[in-house]
Image (cartoon, rainbow, N blue to C red; front, top):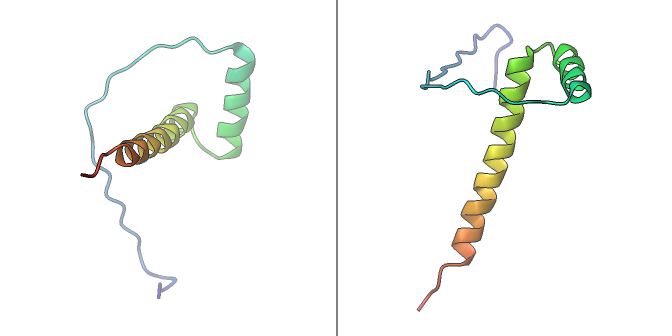
Length: 73
């Protein structure tokens, strides 16, 4: 049970990163900016969120597919 006055501590691990440059169609970029503003996020944070979400889904599927392809003798 959570108390309303209880503080939440968020531990974020800093990981090495690398900058990349990609071309995004202008209309798509404008849509992304609108969504970021609506979510009270920076454009960079929204892009990282979308990439992370898609990556986790694909990795889970890849892991699931690998498990179903294991042969049992």
